[in-house]
Amino acid sequence: MSDGSELVGGGRIRSFVERVENLTREKQEIADGIKEVYAEAKGEGFDVKILKEIVKLRTQDKDERDEHETLLDLYLRAMDEAAASA
Image 1 (cartoon, one colour):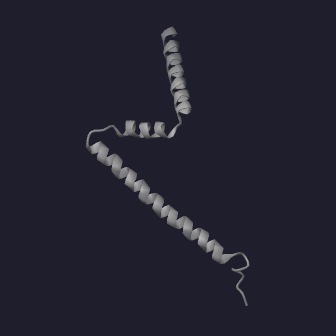
Image 2: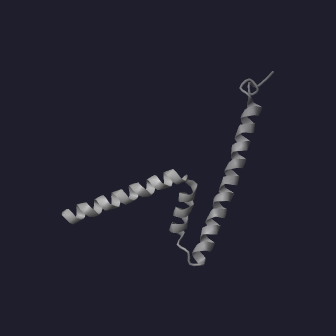
Image 3: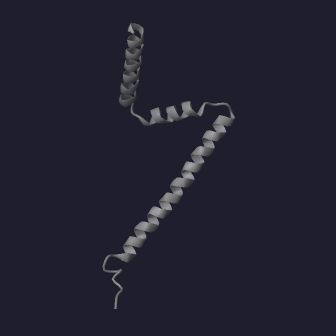
């Protein structure tokens, strides 16, 4: 008599769970590797916050990056103008 696990695809469930567990381990290893690279850069005097910003910008396409920079400039100028008129 079956315990019912095969009725709900116990073997398939185990496969999914094990794949997620493996990927989670790999993700942690990659995150640790990234931390090591940033630590190395910091040790050589580089500003890690700036490096992270560069990485973020490089993942954006040119149009998205241009829009971000335009909005940032617009908001900064609006704040400056509001402060000057206060």
